[in-house]
Length: 88
Image 1 (cartoon, rainbow, N blue to C red):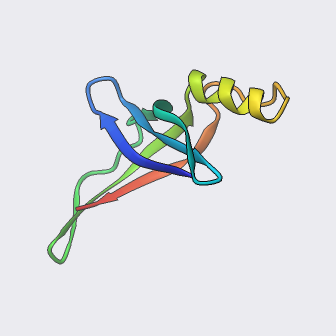
Image 2: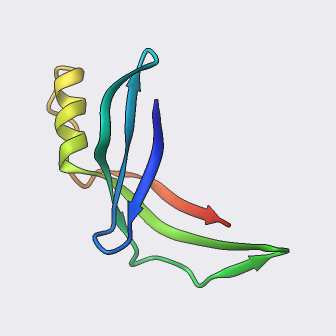
């Protein structure tokens, strides 16, 4: 489980805690790179502001942890995870 996300907007990095079977395996780990090149203009939906379009990619640290955990070398830095949407 991934939780307690912290985004550093200056470096476009997302950090968070990694839990395995309910136990903290890594605290404040560098999980994802955020690439804002495809960010769409701010939209308003009722009282909410919505930002979408930032692509989320595996960090080098996360790739190493995943490869070690699953005894593979298939996970590479920069692999696309998906597109982020933030509603506030």
